[in-house]
Image 1 (cartoon, rainbow, N blue to C red):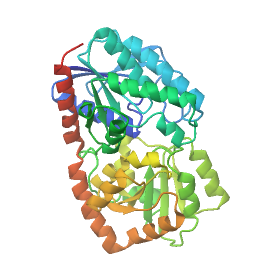
Image 2 (spheres, rainbow, N blue to C red; image 1 turned 30 degrees about the vertical axis):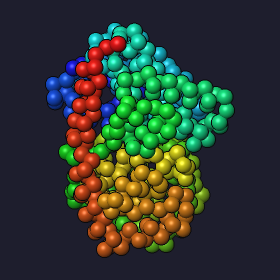
Image 3 (cartoon, rainbow, N blue to C red; image 1 turned 135 degrees about the vertical axis):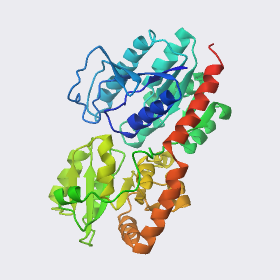
Image 4 (cartoon, one colour; image 1 turned 180 degrees about the horizontal axis):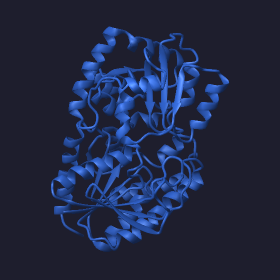
Length: 406
């Protein structure tokens, strides 16, 4: 089977969408399938082309057996709604035209924004091949949540297109059960929707001793380290976190922020203005280096803003941290909280509640609590093994492909 995968995030980018797609494709290739990925030049989250790449009209490379075609797109930083939409639309148009000339048996297009799925829909109509909508975020609902747009005619128009794309696809694969529930409540056939959650690569993320050399380099030896590794975006409420850190009295607790994004400059400025000494900021790191940095952390921090829409989100940080037996301090309600509490793999605080954040931080630091959470991490990680989840998704793809063209 030849799978054509459309995604605007792919390695060497290291965010959750890029990692999920890449690791799934790796597993599918091992099972004898051919994969072509159409993506853009790596630029997330800075909106700057990575070293070694140019924003050309068309370029091809092979990444671990995956045929990767990179197309031109309008590149901008992850801030400013209009510019980001131009980015998304330009990629969708290029992916559509290039995809028309690639042989394939089935098409997968992944969100969060749905302009990529427009391309898959168009290719499917012309080539008469089935297509799958991989739903990683409820867009445009999420852009309302972070304040980029307010409810109005524009949002209503986009929501009508969104529903139309779900209905026109041959299958929707959502990353959370909450997404499935949302779609069913909006009139999408339950039988059309499958759920394949995020998980962790157990070959990359596993328990290991702290990297002493790295601890010494960062001058963090003998610290209880709370680590945040990932995008510093508008949705994560990191400004709240930094202001709350100013109230942390325990001098052994230190916070490590690794990554970049729309809010990075803001939280660095807040840290400076508050003269905080218990925070270290580092630039983004390669995916293969994440376990080394996660090894020196005692706790993984995973917050989001307090918005009802985020109750449907499950941060992928939970799975990678659990695989390394690092308990999560979770600031997300809804399904993510249900999973973490089911396994006891960490502690949850109410999003954007400073008092609760500080109390739960100190609670998690207690030896007896921490040990129980580590045991919970081990069980959670086994149940969310990326290999198993990739096989589950592949079986769904096979069923769709065997259904034939239109």
